[in-house]
Image (cartoon, rainbow, N blue to C red; front, side, top):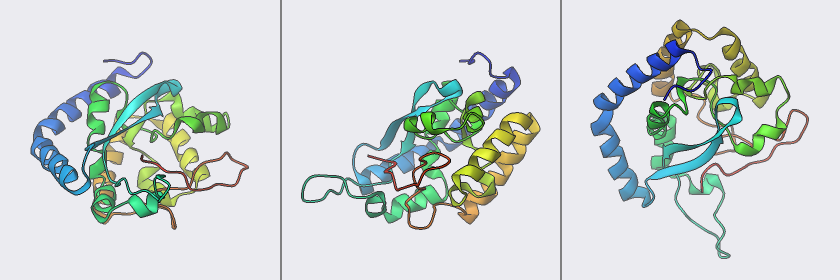
Length: 214
């Protein structure tokens, strides 16, 4: 699929690398799926609707990293209580993101671009922050190699918009290379006190924790 408005060179780059990558890592994907099934149960794949190019919704796919522990009333516990050690490891080295390669094949994501966040954030962006949706969302991005979840929301969005304005194939290659190094070092996995990051409530609002998986 070639999404209308997406540069042809970027789409071809994504398809070539993703197709080759899936062939090379297929044994790893199978092994991870089996481990998730054994350690966390079903479903193996976590699926959630996210805003994509120009805000159009799509279903993102990841390996599951949380269990289904609930309180006496049947409500899911907070993310911090449900994120397992195995799940934390998967997130730390970004292995939970590997199923997103199929989103790339489908034309819903790119290898590089602003991370797709939650649908409810769409109405909370400033006009400048909303420019992050002028390109396909990515598995990794300019903000991810500059701090990932350790950044403030304002800094993340500023870096996302910078990427929109300066995109090139060579920039994507550079981001992918740095991402591999960052994944090994396991930097910026989460904000202090959160399984991932606090909820974005808008540029002038207080922020609170929001579950990322259910």
